[in-house]
Amino acid sequence: MDKYVIRGGRALEGKIAVHGAKNSILPILAASLLNCSGEPIRLKKVPHLHDVWAMLEILSKLGARVAHDGPDILLDTANVKCDQVPEALMREMRSSIFLMGPLLGRLGRVRVCYPGGCAIGERPINLHLEGLQALGAAVEERGSYIEARGRLRGAAITLAYPSVGATENLMLAAVTARGETVIRNAAREPEIIDLQNFLIKMGARVTGAGSPVITIKGGRDLHGGQYRTFPDRIVAGTYLLAAAITRGQVTVEEVVPEHLGALIRVLQKTGADLAAGDTVITVAGGRIKAAPRVDVHPYPGFPTDLQPPLVAYLTLADGTSTVIDHVFKNRFHHVQELRKMGARISLQGHQAVITGVSELKGAAVEAADLRAGAALVLAGLAARGETAVAGIKHIERGYEELPRALGLLGAKIERVAAVPGEGVRL
Image (cartoon, rainbow, N blue to C red; front, side, top):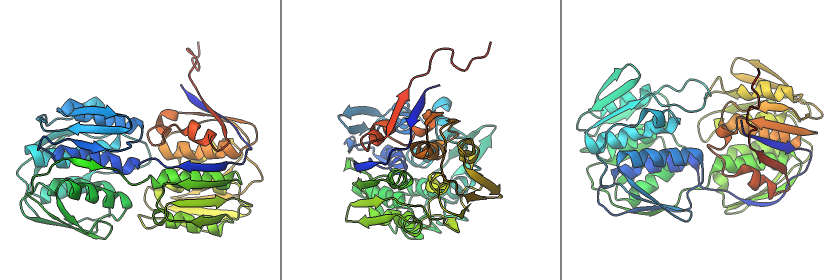
């Protein structure tokens, strides 16, 4: 399999810009299905990511016309008539579940299989289905498939957990429903605000995103327009941690600092110097102090998507750190790979106890999921010697041309294609 080969021990220096948010563009692409006007949608500076191309292929199979104009994507969804997402594409990524809400609202029916994606722990979709039922859909599970039918009507929905995916899916469904929908205990992540802003741009009436209560007044016909997503806060956070773990100095540009408040506080407590402007953050790494306790929670808490890179960073801290993930309690696939590099980490339930070491050593490791892969890359940047990170298909789901980006900061990292027959035992 293809891999990243990293020659570590170099402090990162320089400036780097952040691409558009993966976790914004995917539900926004799904939202494009709500536009029946024939007026095109232009999405500006869409990141080149595996998940984006998979979602665009799904839209094309459903009947949308997809065109590329430099870094922009043009979408014409006027002729979408298909209500079934191809199984192979549905299993490509978790975010394909976002298609249920808009397809059901537009066509009155939808049939999907259970979605795929990274193996980061249990992510049930019952909140999605219960919410659609509250909006009037008849939902039936048949083997590995889910079918939903019905004309949607507004409703009051209280989520049992502030799920980002369920919040977004129900927002998309409610836009087409008759009457008013109120979603309580909604997720508050910035990507929810991004989706609301896009829907408003298309003519929808949505308020409250970023708070626990979102109100949607449905029944409006939506139209096209152009939009650019927020910068990717998880990519920005990964760059900040990469600079800090290598004890370098990096300015991350085209970022929203307030989206990274929880990470900034942890970095400051662990010895890094940070300065934030309107759209930039500069970090200067130094000797890393332990973080006695970091609790991972939904936004505005510390993000679960930055938990694996944070664990990698804390492997080089003075003293013992504890990271507790309250969101995905089994999201520790990176731990056993970091141990191969000399890290001292013990798992106790859904918490990692990290005893800092003086150095990490290069090793052959493999990414089991997207953010675990980012953690291994960070460890490789700081390690002595050469690290080979396999499983990079996961990393490329969420990071655009990561070797090139880190190379601009002085990292020695290259993408190496697989050798035919490599890893095969005769």
